[in-house]
Image (cartoon, rainbow, N blue to C red):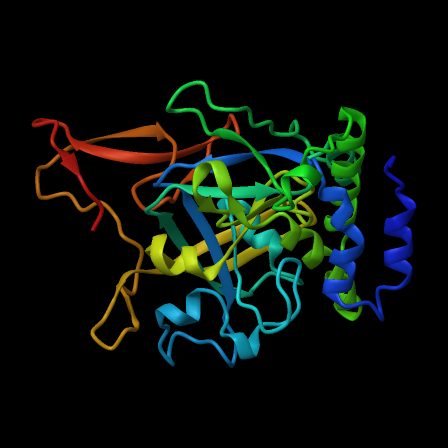
Length: 341
């Protein structure tokens, strides 16, 4: 049966009264034969997450590991990729995206920015990566494409989503229908949702859950969903990870106390105030009272070099070419590396 986009209009019209499972039941026929290409990330991928400092979350009260990951079930509100009462770890693949994702961020606000690193290969599905979605959001980058791997270092794989009976899965859709369905999923998943319209997340959750599950040919589950940042005009990528992956395959690297120096519609100026790289015996972050820096001995000279990519903790600055880079230092005489302390 040809794809009829009006089915989404009917769901949107009934969203206030529909349950998530009812929405999934209506959309399930679209998954028959639906195929999508998604990335897989090797161990060592960096993720970024932030939380605003306020009366309920402060350094003086002590910041624990559980304060920095996904919220406990009783505090988990309905969100873009989670039902009420379901914990999901929302993060960004780029440090810049984190600040734009925090609603109503303004000059003078302070937050804890955390850096995380995966320790295992991570398969994620994706929603929102279409020409239509990127054009509507005003993205200044091309839509990423992921192709089946041809060599071990490639990061793409092709997976078929449905776990329906084989005779049903064998009913193939045309390429045009597949594109139209992907566009429809993207359009409705990427829809901006205001605080007083949280019921609209029921549709995004339904779409998200239909993109999760077991990948038969890889013998693994999707760890989560990758999607473009709406608040960053699709110029950054967000990720929502399931707790099982976070608990077993995500490593804390550092936390930074950040103050917002200035904010415009498209730029955010920040100051690093303090940093923590580990937890104390009581399970609280050990703040240094400063940011790590290079310290030279008397008469010692050093040579500093800008290097492409993130540092060992995933931190970086953005170079003139728009790409991440970081500084390294070596002793000018011995050529031995000097590490910030």
